[in-house]
Amino acid sequence: MIHGIRRACATTVALLCGALLASCSGDGAAEQPNVSGDIRIGLIAPLTGNDPATGRDAQRGAELATRLINAGTDGFVYQDGRIWGPAGHARLSIVTLDTKGDRQRAADETSTLAADKQVAGVVGAFGADATLDASQRAERLQTPFLSGDAPLTALTERGLNWFFRTAPDTAVFGSGFLSLLRNAEQTGQDPRRIALLYSNDATGNDLRSTVTEFAEEAGYPVAASVSYEPGDPNPSAAVTAIRDAAPDVVLMTADGGDGGRLAQAFTTVGYLPPAVVVYGPAAQTAQIAAAPGFSDRISREAAWSLPIARANPLAAAVAERYQRDFGAPMSAEAANAFTAVTVFARAIDDAGSIDRERVRSALVAVDLPGNETIMPWNGVRFDGTHQNTLAATVIEQNTDGSFAPVYPRDLATTTVHWPPAGAASTPGTAAGTAAGTTATATAARTTRAAAR
Image 1 (tube, rainbow, N blue to C red):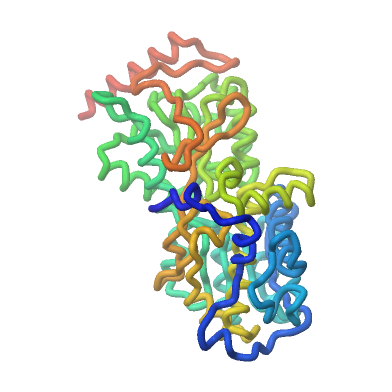
Image 2 (image 1 turned 120 degrees about the vertical axis):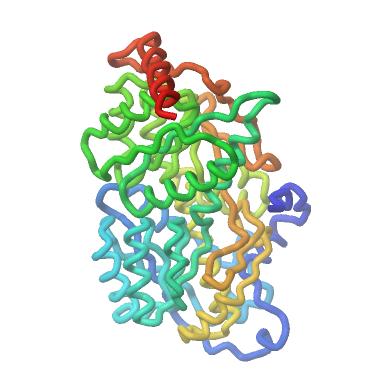
């Protein structure tokens, strides 16, 4: 993937912002659009429940997109204003409904948006299970549904006509993780042994199957693959099994409030892995990073990175506006929602209509270059399954209290710092000693060798 387009951009901020959602040229642009008044896009997100931070940030990102599209100020001006901006005849608004992290509620709220709120499309649902059910409901209601976050492979394997995903899928995240492992290797170094600590749900099992397959093909041994039940108040048994396998890197899922519970389990068991990569919302990663001893051992996968954004004039301008409007740094969840809304607005502009079938057809044809998005991607272009083939992943490592990109290489601001393969794990502040942990690791390896 050609991530280097970010650094090569020499256009001014105003021109880049003007490119955002610019109307298409050609015959379609010559048609008189039939769009005016208040145009609504629905957003379903967990504003309450186990992970309200994700819903809050998603709502903020979506709202910021409408402000920039409608105002046409600070450089966010459409080339001809035929629909949006001060010269246009329509204003974009977001109608947000709370899923509470519940899949049935997500489906029901999708029905409400499509039938009662008369939205042109729906963005959501910021959770794999909720997105599965909500998008299936949108399919029955023939309403465009755009996911900006959930990477679950199955979402684009159902043959749905009305579902689209701008964000990377699990395969992209899995290949990014394996690429980071290769990048971190020294000449002559043994491959690092991986352990998977995953939630026993759609997201966790999808990651497990994908990474296991990729690791086998790439020659990376999977030392352990251990599941925990989502919401389990004490997943210490799962953490103990990971500790006993003595891996070099732990790849783990954390969602829906599980971050804090997993952090407590690591502390209770007294286990500090040499390196940890978290696959889940930033708020959950932060809870794990806050556990004693974890801060400089933890990395996270995401579709967006604030340090990378600062190198892209368009993304930097959006991130600065987000900070000014909401008093907090822009998060990946906010960026995902922002991008999904802008893609919807682009499709409406291209279609010259809010007729759902025409908007769906315009989404199929969307082809945005990377410099017209705020994401560290090559752009937005959907394949036959309606997956964005130009999406990419970023991996950041926590160093000195802040996360910095370590992957992909051409966008990295620092190098990954992991101990070499075979380095002993360190005990945490609870029970356990380094000698005990090393002895357990040696015993586990001896047992596996005998089993072979």
